[in-house]
View 1: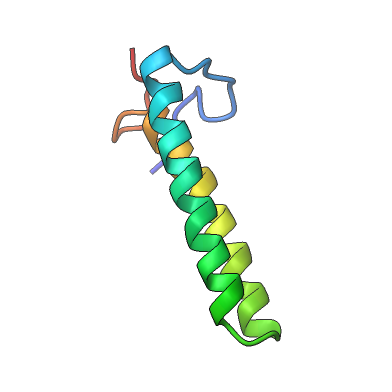
View 2: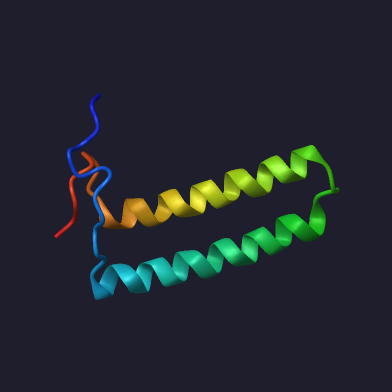
Length: 73
């Protein structure tokens, strides 16, 4: 499946999208703190925290796009 033409474009979030992103960002922060506090130090913890950071960023993309990759209005 090819990427949508706007995949690498900047999509300015609407006020509603910004509000949703703030909720997701806070939830991601809380979960990251729980992971950091409860996982033993080592490469697995590093991987989990980096993967979580990536998932948090993709959650913000999902807020601004439709399932087919087109920008939400």
